[in-house]
Length: 358
Ligand code: NAD
Ligand code: MN
Picture 1: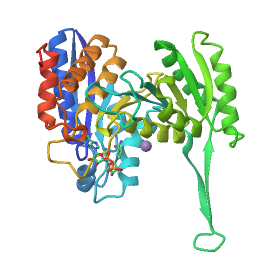
Picture 2 (picture 1 turned 90 degrees about the vertical axis):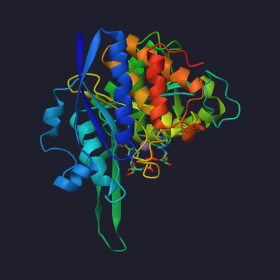
Picture 3 (picture 1 turned 180 degrees about the vertical axis):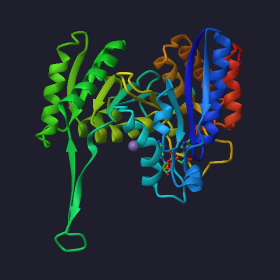
């Protein structure tokens, strides 16, 4: 029997509702399969832990997490604490500490959901956005001078390293090569940003020569935003910088119908460190504690985690179960349904066990 060690970090707000829901469907999958088991350890880190200890996670937290095969993460964010403390103290500490340089965001319109785009047919939107997750515009380089004076200045310098750009390009070409259409769009702004972005284009061309089965093209980020709305079916796999992909992937989430269904993986493709899987959404103060959070983003996140762990049959079974439940209209309020978190989770567990949802 294969065993995978999972660190579960629900953290804050609806993270405490959707992660337990995700663990329930994972347990149902392991039971149904009989070939693998998940050894789950829960960590109480997050804003409540901060209030009790002054830290978002244990001092030796990264050391502890190193021993796990994957991290299943909820969301951080608390109404009474500054976002930079909660985000940098836990989520970014893990992403950066474990060099999770590839942020992968798949987008599809699930059955039963409606895209806000008027002219979208089922299947038109099937994208994977690959976001550089370790440098670029979010490298933290820059500073402030002349504070409080008329000549005050602030700089925010984007950092692009040959190693950093090459490795994210390789990841993107690998993903594109594994998909039916094998099309990769390399997004830049190399007309206006003539140093880092031209470098990015050059490295794309170098890496491309190792992937002859992939068709690739360049697109400027502003044109890409328009293309996502106007010609969504023309897009397959996309790679972009930390900032550009941050913005494009929120647009992708909106185009797919709801933040409540969008998953993401923060990968260390070298597998030196554990990778982290999380829904894209935050802690959702407005609905936390009410039991109405949409667990679908977390379930899809679990699909990505199972794929990463090599449990492809279980991953496919879970995705099918989620699609059946959405198609049957068993959905939460954010996507037009009336079910609560528990009812959606029950339905997905039943679908995993082979129940007919009618
Ligand atoms: P949010 O994603 O928490 O919520 C935005 C809106 O979407 C809210 O109306 C919320 O109710 C709704 N929503 C989100 N997820 C949902 C779900 N699963 N089901 C139903 N509705 C859902 O974003 P926000 O309000 O900007 O941020 C709240 C807190 O979360 C902030 O502290 C922010 O910093 C943090 N945050 C954390 C992460 C993360 O941990 N990765 C991501 C985004 C925001
Ligand atoms: Mn973002």
